Image (cartoon, rainbow, N blue to C red; front, side, top):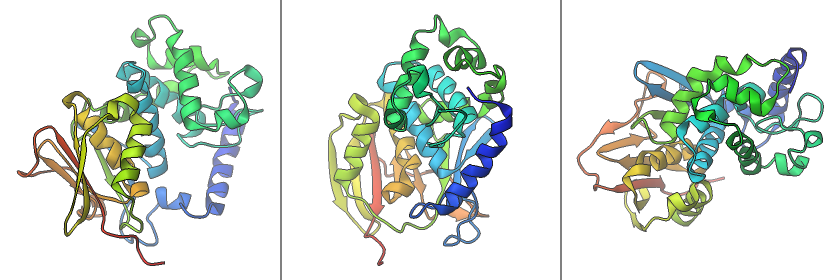
Length: 296
């Protein structure tokens, strides 16, 4: 799909473009945030003794890609293949430039019938386009991740996807719910809040029929809490989805299956992760939103 010669330029351009983006500053996803001194912002996926790290924007895209695989009824292996591909092609960023006319998370090319530029720049469209092609690969789940990715992408450098296999498998395992408490994120203090309705709509958009959940809300000291009755098969998937989007949605706490993640529980520059608690209700996921948007 692209040559080694342009990869260095893509990296430089990504940094430069990120510096110019207002609102969600790209650097805050990669380095210690000016408004969160001492915190190393980002998310980690841990499987066994191995841990791998992504920036916040990358994690949101990884959660989307993984959720779509589950929506489609594909195995977690499909999410691993897709994440390894997107890591190689775009570093899991929805970029509008690339080799020749390639764009988006998977660097798909309009000239090769992947769709229009506008379509490919829609992460949902591009991920589904990738999965459409992957589904046509015979026995893709039994192939090495690199080989399955290469059959879909037809890259000029056919062995580059393998280097991302450990990270992609760890994040896919956490984001599809196969590894309980497998995802942890270190975030700046909440500067915006969402509503339970907005969070429910976002979950529905990301998870589709997997998020057909009964919901109630309560208000307490920490903020407004959204309680979701979840199917155990997807409980940790939805809990990790909420965590992956906590910065975007103003989430300050997520509780599920006797464990709680607290946005403000940090030590040595990192969030302490999921901690055991006694107050969770079996089969219920609780998402606590920041009490109110920050002034200004």
